[in-house]
Image 1: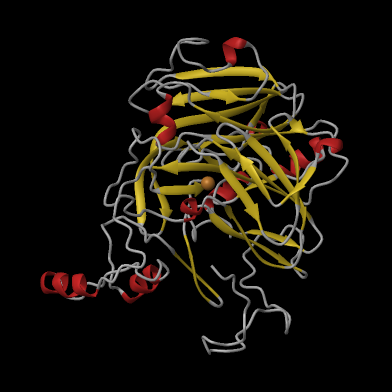
Image 2 (image 1 turned 60 degrees about the vertical axis):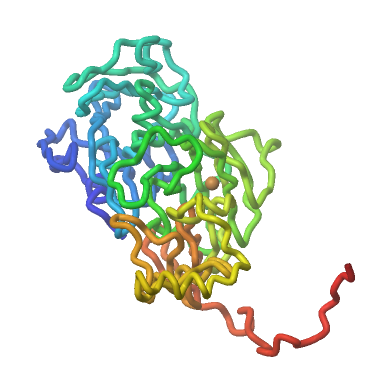
Length: 435
Ligand SMILES: [Cu+2]
């Protein structure tokens, strides 16, 4: 899917570049943003793909790559049915991905469109102390309406992040963050065919509300990859046999054990760069701790594969965390009593929670306004019953190189799908342990 932002990030010389959702300014041809294709020639790398996001264009000024970030309030959709007032950069949360090459001299103009001061900290980047972006410690705060300039030379490569270091608890809780990818100057010995990045986050967007609550420490409502929840997170797509890297960053308040089905991936890097090969290790789940980044690489195997955080509540949307446990409880009496007040009420959770999605689909549960169902998503074989930090890796033999469009559902070869062989609950004689 090509979004408006993809179009902008790939726009060539002399084009109109939207600096934010509402502001459009003309860029002179000599200062025109460089395209990822130009990056490829200069730096010998595969451009980053930020799913549901975009890459920030830059202008070349006397050998310096100049980027312009604008901190501002935005309207953000987590998935259809849930929109909130968030804060981000240049019209989005996460802010656009910054992409550069080791050795580059970079300049960041940072305009503060908020009503309180801010700064940007370049998380994990080696730079002079005064460029580190800690308000009050390394620089004065950037006041509302002001523009500050940061400038430094990139002396490393790897998967990095950026975020405010001013009223940090609030500004990060409402979405101010982004990825900062630096490619090695000499290219990479083991070449990458598709290079994706995800920034993980958590949001206290309480049911029925429209602004994330910055005061929450543990009990979050939404868990996101690039500020989206399943099923609004674009799939990671690849052609069979391609080498895929997924760079994961974590600026949330929880650690996320990121799990991929179908392959063993190699953990190959972090904000310490691409590690020496002797440090690569095969895993199927990797904890991406708070404030950390991890690079996961694998060779694509055909199929539709789940890719998600393994904290099971992180693959759900908002739920009532403080309700009593209804598992195994006969609620038929409660049903009748509540139905007198609320016709159509159906108690849930006696046999498990999967029925939640069916009830939502039947229209029996319409939760508070602006609130997503706890679990959702349709697959070719029924409800997927997920939310939050869940998406798919879709690998196909016939996908064209450079094609990122969703190929639809996998057509599994005959005889390779689990199937029913009995509907008799007493079928067979499974061994059971005697108590
Ligand atoms: Cu998680």
